[in-house]
Length: 117
Ligand code: AMP
Ligand code: ZN
Image 1 (cartoon, helix red, strand yellow):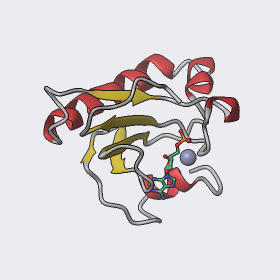
Image 2 (tube, helix red, strand yellow):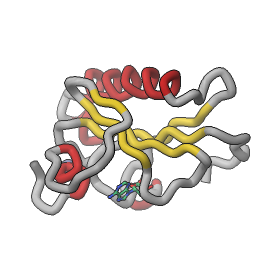
Image 3 (cartoon, protein in one colour):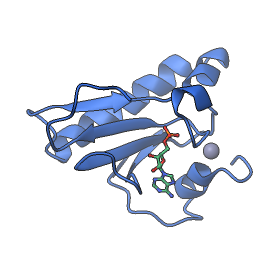
């Protein structure tokens, strides 16, 4: 666990959270400040700062694949299909990342606007 990483603390259960879904590699929680009617975060169980770092470390393909596999399970489980949803990975501060433990956003449950911002 990385020191002072809030998502590591959630993964390790130091901070309690309701898990929407879980696999051997990742968990899914609800975003504390939802930006859509339904907003989930898929967190890898292994700490890595960003998707860029994951690929730099040679673990990106496996990790991103496992995040999307669990996301696919969640969008079906939570009823985001067939209507649709959006997935987002913010990278570094300029890309809007505020928690520096890689995570995949899943947004849906309403008609999303066209903007990425
Ligand atoms: P990002 O800006 O891409 O790094 O996204 C970080 C997300 O984590 C934001 O949408 C926050 O609302 C969310 N977040 C921060 N702390 C928590 C928490 N304790 N539980 C759930 N979501 C959180
Ligand atoms: Zn972490």
